[in-house]
Length: 169
Image (tube, rainbow, N blue to C red; front, side, top):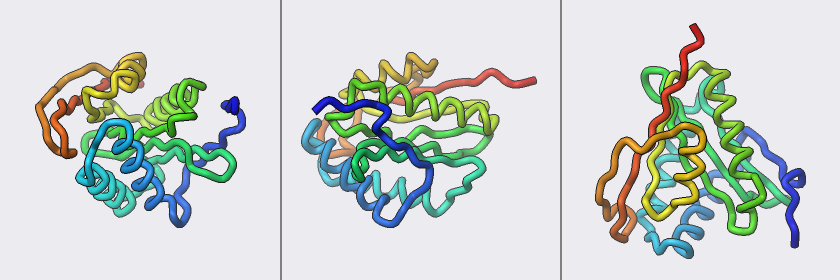
């Protein structure tokens, strides 16, 4: 089945069952594709609960991608201290990769960063996601930190990418 980008709806508000499904989807995909254990699913759960608990629609945003009534993609912008935003939980279901959805979500993320007036953004990812790293770097993020980790049940390198935005003065 050929999926057209225009067929995918993107909404910016949670609905009942979204949190649980996004946690499930992360756990399922990262287990199948990278061998991550349940510690990763717990990590996503903790982070989404933190976001939900501290949610402020003026400075926080989710983008929930749906196709035929099913969540197929997700991205979250979480406010942090000092006009900094964190990019978290970027996920595309396998069959929705390569159609421009990831770039569309990054465009929405970058637009919201500028609209709110953030001065910086950062994200953490792992070394086994080179396509994601390439996408982040194409938007100006640079690798600033790397550390060995067993956080998700397998040996990997966690990587931090940072972005500094031009001020609007």
